[in-house]
Amino acid sequence: MVTSSWEYENGFREVWHAHEAAQLIYVTRGVLRILTPAGIWTLPPFHGIWLPPTVPHELHAIGEVIVRTAWVAPQTDPALDRWTQCQVLHMSPLLDALVSALADETDNDDRRAALALPLFLLELTRAPRLTSGTLPLPQDRRLRSICEELLSYPQNTDTIELWGERVGASTRTLARLFREETGLSFGQWRQQLRLVEAVAKLALDVPVSTIAAELGYQSSSAFISMFRKTLGETPQRYLKKRDGS
Image (tube, one colour):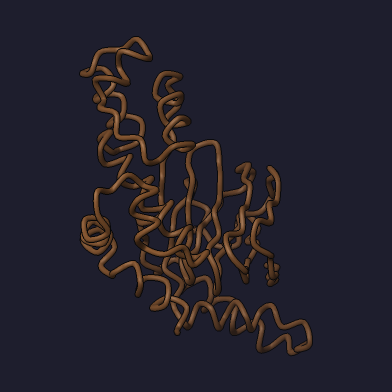
């Protein structure tokens, strides 16, 4: 297994690429956005994503970002070989410490590495799986066009009936396809989009009142209520709680 750590400036992009090994990638500061053909993931500090081997992906740094990563070769662990889909994981302090220890190139103690690696693999398989920050992307061309428009203008409040008229599909068909291809209703998908956009803006220190207005909420209190109900924290505390400040 290979581990490493990087620092990215705000706005940095690592263009589409893939690895032969699986990759665990997470941030300890800032927010990282991961794009794959199947979805978009927006990761606050100590949320990580498991990328199976050969999955094309692109990285976007939001704010000043510190990234840690580990590449896990196939057949390293049978349980991890069964992880064939991208998934978001909570990175515990122990997991973070193990990645840091395995990345320490100044320590050539093979015995220490031999002890740390099995514990890392065990803790990784036990890490809680998360759904926050996940925005699945549909494959149907009609749904894809709707999602692309909303990605550009997340404050859009048009109903699913209006979108159906634009793309030439009935409301019932669109509602069914959204459920089948994303696991979310149209309304849930749009709310999830606004949440991940909000997290990105918070990382750039955009005021909550500005975020609420830009995402189409009638008031800051309505936005804060939605945010807290979904993520369990107010916007002001969400990132601070995760970066230890």
